[in-house]
Amino acid sequence: MSRLLIKNASAIVTCDDHDLIWENANILICDGVITYIGRELQQAEETIDASDCIVYPGLINTHHHLYQAFSRNLPQVQNKELFGWLKALYQIWKNLDHDVIYQSSLTGMGELLKTGCTTCFDHHYVFPGGDSVRFLESQFMAAKVLGIRMYASRGSMDLSEKDGGLPPDSVVQTVDEIIRDSRNAVEKYHDPSQFSMRMVALAPCSPFSASKELYRQSAVLARELGVRLHTHLCETRDEEQYVIKKYGKRPFGYMEEMGWVGNDVWYAHGIHFNDEELKLLAETGTGVAHCPISNMKLSSGICPVPDMLKLGIPVGLAVDGSASNDGSNLLEELRVAFLLHRLNSSKLAPTGYDLLKIATRGSAKVLGREDIGSLEQGKAGDLFLIRRSRLELVGADQDVASVLGTVGFKGAVDYTVVNGRVVVEHGRLAGIDEEREIVKGREVVKHYLSRY
Image 1 (cartoon, rainbow, N blue to C red):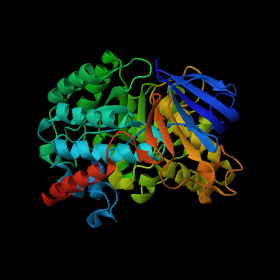
Image 2: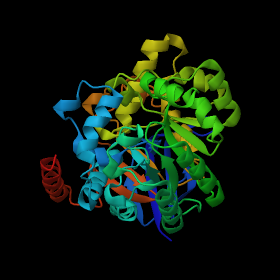
Image 3: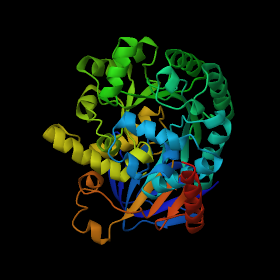
C-alpha cells in the first residue's frame, strides 16, 4: 500500500457538501484514495510539508482540443470569428500526425497539471487518413507519462465542404467508419471503474460538420456501450442560422429530436439558449462546459451561467482548444469567468468560491463522475497546493475559498497530486524532463507548420 501524507496544511478547502475549510490539518491518501482528513498526524512513506500551503481539490477541465496547442497565436486567424477561423485552421490541421498529437497532448496537459488541473477531457475529432486508433493511443501515452487523469473522446465529422460543411474532405469519414472506430475505441480504452484514469466519450464535432445520421447512430451506440455523449452546441449565431436553415429547427431542438438530451450528455459552450431551452436542460440534467476565454476571443457571446446555476443545470469549466484560447490554464479560466460574469451580471454573478466549485464539483458532475471534485474521505487523492508566503498573495489570502476567482493566481502551483501521486513538485512536472520536451515540441511545431 502506498501512503502520501499532506502534513500540517495551513488551509484545506474541501468543496464538500458543507463547504468545510480545515485549518492546520492533514490529508492521508492511501493507494490513490483519501482515507483521512483531520488534525491527527498520520504515518506515511511519503510526506509533503504543507505548513504554509492552501490545499484545493484538483481542477477538472470539461472541454479541450489538445492538438490545437501547436497552432496557437497565428496572426492570420487572430481577428476571425468561429466559421472563418475554423476554415483557415483546417488547412493546418489536415496535416496532423502521431508526433503532433503526442507532443501537443504533452504540452497542453503539462500546462494543465502545472496550473492545478488533475483531470482533462479532450474533444479530438480531426483524423486525417482515418488514423483514430493511433491518435487516441498517443494521447493516452502522453497522459500516462504525465500522470494526469485523462478523459478522451472519439470525436467525428462526416460533412465536408462538398456536403455543405466546413472541414476539407481529407479529415472526414463515413458514418460506418466512424461508428466502427467508435466501438473499437470504447472497447479498447474505456475504463468505467471507480477512480479510473482512462475514459472515452463519443463526440461528433458540431451540427455544421456532423450529419443527422452520425448524431443518431452515435447516441444509440453510446447508450449501448454505457458511455457519455458530447458535442459543440449553441456557440455562435452563425451556427444557429446554419441549423435553422438546414434543418428547420433551433440547434437545441435539433439535438432533442435526435435523442441528444439527458444526464449522459453535455455540450461545449451553450451560449445561445433561450429561456425554454434552459428549463429543458435543467429538467433533463443535460450539462454545459463553460469556455469563457474562448468565447471572448472568438467574439461568440457570454454563456448565461448565472441563469443556469439558478435552474440547477450542471455546469463545468473548460479551457477549450488552445488555438481559440491560446493557453491550457484552468486557473486563468476560473478568474476570467469570475470577472466576466461580474461585468455582465453584477450581484447575480457567481462568487469566486462558486467558480471554484464549478471547476471542481460542477465539472465532475458534467463528466458523470462522483469520485473526484472534492476533498473528503473516499474521494480520489487529486489536489493541488499553493504556498501563501509569496509576494503575489500578501494581503490577498484572507478568503482562501474565493481568492482563486477574486484575485487569481499566476504561474505554476507548488504541488499537484493525482491519484495519490506527486506529478508537479515545486512548480515543475515530475514525470518528464521539461527542457528536453520543450526542445522536441518546438521541433515538431516547426515541421508541422512548415507543411501549411
